[in-house]
Amino acid sequence: MTRLLHFTDMHLRWHQPGSAANPKRASRDMPGALDRLAANIAALAPDILIMSGDILDMPDPVIAGGSPDGRPHDAWMADAIADFQLVKDWFEATGIPYIAVPGNHDHEGAFAAVFGGPPEPRDIAGLRFFSFWDRLAADRQPHRTGARRAMFARALDAPEHDCAQIHIQHYMIDPPTFAKGWHYQYKGAAAMKRDIARSGRVRAVLSGHYHPGSLVADDAVVHSLPPAFCEAPHAFRIYDIDKNGVDVTDQALDR
Image (tube, rainbow, N blue to C red; front, top):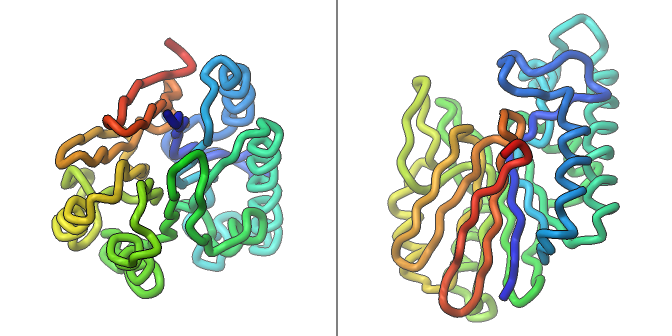
């Protein structure tokens, strides 16, 4: 059996000034929440830790190359890199293998400067992990294009990847979700879901982005995103995976 611990959408700010615009997102409390999560890890005994994006809460103007407050863009970027380093140091201190991917509130270049990338498939504890650094299209619906789309096709079809897989990404494939005027699922999500099921290789697709969270299990594939870690009760999920299937357990720091 392989055990995964998955959390998402932390929206951390520590070196960066301020906090998320949405007051439910406890950006400045996240270093303490990470410490609390670390205190539970020994008892939970995961084989791997997974963080599926929006690690930080970087303002949109900073991600676009500007500044929301008149400070130089370089100062914001330096603070964001320091925040990414804080999170990486936390992962490293656990001593457990981990995978993190950027989300739409993370600057991909700053993320890569700290965590490295773009990623290659990794074999950990009997599973092959594929990480997808996808982006929002102009209409803010996520899409998978270019090298990321090619990696997706190889994962599902190439003989060298004929093994049990976990796919990690910030955006969701299933269920179709429309909220606050936006589509949260990928463009072409129905076809992506069919291709995943047809391959018979993918055990779970682990995502973030939609803060209420969701869980779908059909065609022997689990599509899962926990509720956002930045919002009370600071939820995360445990997956126990063996040849018989995937067992999902919801956890939270405050219950």
